[in-house]
Image (cartoon, rainbow, N blue to C red; front, side, top):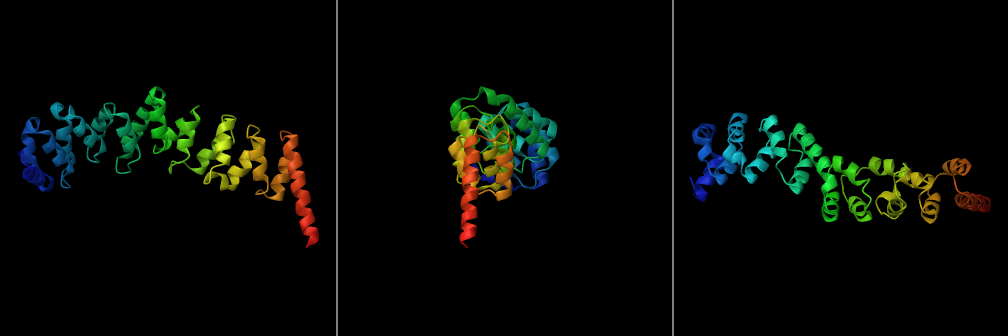
Length: 247
């Protein structure tokens, strides 16, 4: 079964034919094993047979396909996770077709390996990673990693808000959030930026006009609010009162 036509036949073969071919699983070629795994009729039992054949699981492409396959026995898929490359794990971690228990095992591997990544790998991964790595990269000390993370569509408002509201956010991160076209327009984030004493004062002051008067008053009465921000709030309230009077 070495011809391209035979490979295509394996992708469409019915269960009886697949069972016959897998009677001698150890003799399968790489393309044949991949074709069987791509077959829509393949059963968990047949996938398990491939997963239990060491010569096949020794092939990287087969390992990757088995981890991604919904019919691979969980124990086999989780074991094979340890033998995949970093960027393949990132891809699989955000693939909703991969069973949830396998994705959790992938996330565990990703978090464990993250500390050994180069700067370039961290920047590239931050653009497309899932929730587990987002939590890691939110605390990455390099600004280029955080800049890349801000473009990741899987980052949620709660992720950004939890950072801004904490003492873990750096001044540089807060400045980037304040200038970001997506995140700086969220009311809760605007307020959190003003409340965080590490936010550069010009960035914090620029958010004040978007806050409600009641929130500005609470911030003004907060003992932790700087004199500069208090004066900005007072000036805004005076301007607001004057505008109301003119009406």
